[in-house]
Amino acid sequence: MSRVAFEYIAMELSPIISKRDTNFRKGISARQRLAVTLYRLADTASYRTIANLFAIGKSTVCEIVVQVCNAIVQFLLPRYVRLPQSAQEIRERIDESRDRAGFPQVVACVDGCHIPIKAPQNNPEDYWMRTICFETFVSDGLENVYDTINGVRVPPLILGDSAYPLQDWLMKPYVDRGNLSAEELQFNNLLSITRVVVENGYGRLKGRFPALAKRLDLNVNNCCTVIAARCVLHNFCEIMKEEFEEQWLLDIPINGAICPNEDVNQQQDRNAAAIREAIRIFLS
Image 1: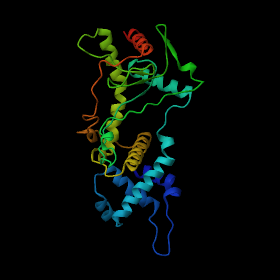
Image 2 (image 1 turned 90 degrees about the horizontal axis):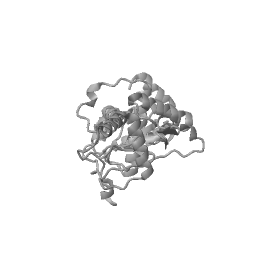
Image 3 (image 1 turned 90 degrees about the vertical axis):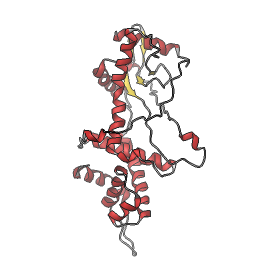
Image 4 (image 1 turned 60 degrees about the horizontal axis):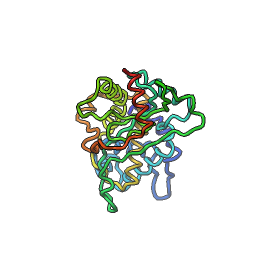
């Protein structure tokens, strides 16, 4: 992160993370608190190492990181991590995706990303899996972002891989048992080309914050906060055109071995299947 970007973030968070001086000690400045947090988020250094570097206590480092991450998530996340809220924003996303590979009506892509954490004491097996969160757009003003393709009404779509269920708002590839037609293979290929942005996004996130490859020794709630703070800072850096070296992507694990097996017998929504068929014909 450049000095300009650092100073901008420090200015944004200063009123929230600043601490007053007391009769017993001088408060740690907002700039130093932010620097400690960024060092911890980006590097794999231990709390003790960071404490020595900044001449503060180990417990103080832990406290600062959680507090600053909470501030980042509370005040900056709505600005830098957001879904399209209006029909115009959705249409802009659809046009951007269509320009990439010609796949119509795509507003977003979804995927899973493995981040190791310390197993919680309660139900630790629940966290050894791929967690999927679906968000849909519900508004009375979105009728004009629907499209009719080969006689089928198609809503804004989210693209997923074969692990996701086929829904009328979520498209996935055709199951490849070795007997797909040329048109179905082309559909799968164009879906993959369009959807690769989400994998690239995870790669750049982990490249910028390599500490994500190391186990997070925090409780589950703090893990979510710290990961969300990294996402906010990553998007901020992307918007600010901060330097990103391609070598950071080397040996970056994206999904690892977390992808569940595809359920080839999964029941499909008939309307969703009709939408996929209409798009397949459109792309052929």
